[in-house]
Image (tube, rainbow, N blue to C red; front, side, top):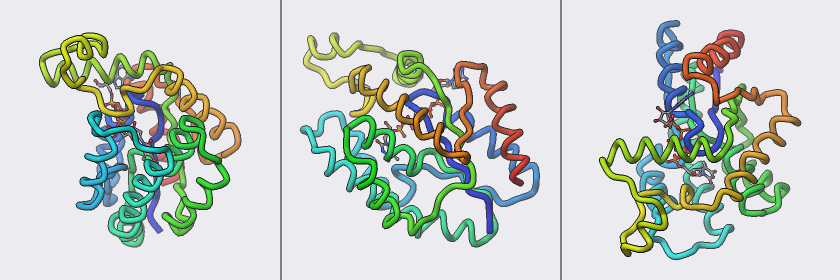
Length: 223
Ligand code: T5A
């Protein structure tokens, strides 16, 4: 029933870019395509996304953060993903359970065993058929993400400049994390890929066209 593809990787790795071009590819095959993301794909999820990414939020614990992502996922699976798969659609989801393992597990240090148990509850055991993991140096990904935001806002402040001026930086709560955090997350994704044949590691330092070509081959095989 359907085909469930997830896109994973650090900030700025190119997931949104790939998700758009993959959707065009799948649409051309005359299959229903549902493009979705975590967090924030449902009305409840939109509220949770605002909370989770808010850079002005006082520090929240890793467990509180985990439970907010889990609430988003539980709603998302029931409201969007399962119905789409039942209609035989191709679901392309930007982030899913491997983000929780990488960010809350490897990044924040929560026990992977507990995360897997919680994931079982939030998803009812629904795992992707294919995980496209965009692997990139965190410094490159963060630069890409920040340049994109600078283009969107027309201005760019470093964290230090924002702190000096007393203004709130434009970057979200995760983008503001230190490089060591993003490196742990990237290493975590790579460790997950080494032990799971559903995860296809793609070199995200390549051009968008080259990344799409590598992803396309894997998707067409599964279609
Ligand atoms: N999170 C999420 C958790 O901690 N636990 C969880 O369980 C879940 C589900 C979500 C945050 O939540 C965390 C992880 C995240 O920190 P988000 O805003 O949804 O936050 O952030 P991201 O998913 O990281 O999205 P980004 O938009 O930052 O990154 P993308 O989508 O990977 O990057 P993209 O495609 O927008 O590209 C960034 C820029 O690079 C260019 C693009 O044009 C764009 O300008 N680009 C390339 N440039 C050169 N070469 C390429 N191959 C390129 N591909 C794209």
